[in-house]
Length: 324
Image 1 (tube, rainbow, N blue to C red):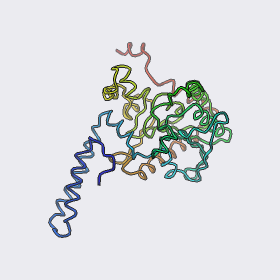
Image 2 (tube, one colour):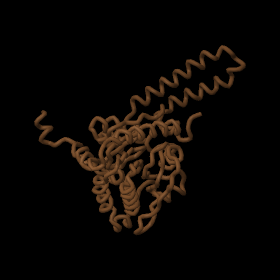
Image 3 (cartoon, rainbow, N blue to C red):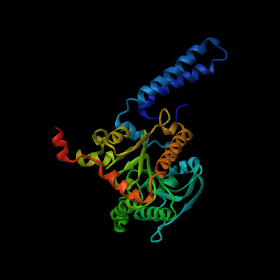
Image 4 (cartoon, rainbow, N blue to C red):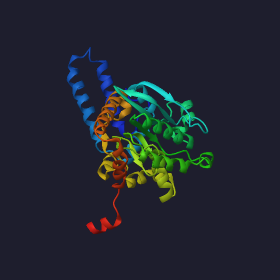
């Protein structure tokens, strides 16, 4: 059966799946259908692979925003043991767009920080669709500083179209609090692992994205601006979001090529929304591997290594001209 929210470019696969379902209904009464069923299953796999090997960047955005794609609280249930949530920023309130708490991943104790959009209308309204307010970034930073004091590694899951753009958020220091997080995360003497699980939009994502190891799921994106925001600035209308998506070069393959991320975590065939458990298993393996790699780095050296990592991102204009 196709998912509840099929993507347009997957339509050929769903048509083949409908044909397969009809054949399977009559397989018991018509034995000679077994070969046709087997061939059709192979064709479905081949067709899905062909589609997902040739995705347009705008198609990747659609997958990243799929309503059934696993979110932070789904990974809390599938990935973490003994999760104890920590609330509030001790100044204004508890922003539900950012979830924090102590947790264990197998035998590793960590501080967990994740952006959550909401899985139903009530949650989405509480979480503002993953768009955090200043108090959310203060909460995250306070918990990360606590982790550093207790020598706990930090795991951040990024999933936001951007920080909340409302007047109240600006009045309470949205840009300032994100800037403070960039500064203070870079100084923490504890391992930080950041993984983009769906959308990584603008400073809202970067506010919990300064890590020693930065990963991204295969069909997620990480960008200085959302494609709609870029289209509105450059072409004056969001209908050109597909053009903006191509121009921004924000898919996982591009980000790995540019050195912005350290790892691309492969998703199940057809995207993470097709198999939450398989995706959680791959994500856990990536996190545990990154933690193991960082175990050998002295804590006093982590801020300098982090600084050098981010300083290497990008190409200076003079260097590009010289190469040409």
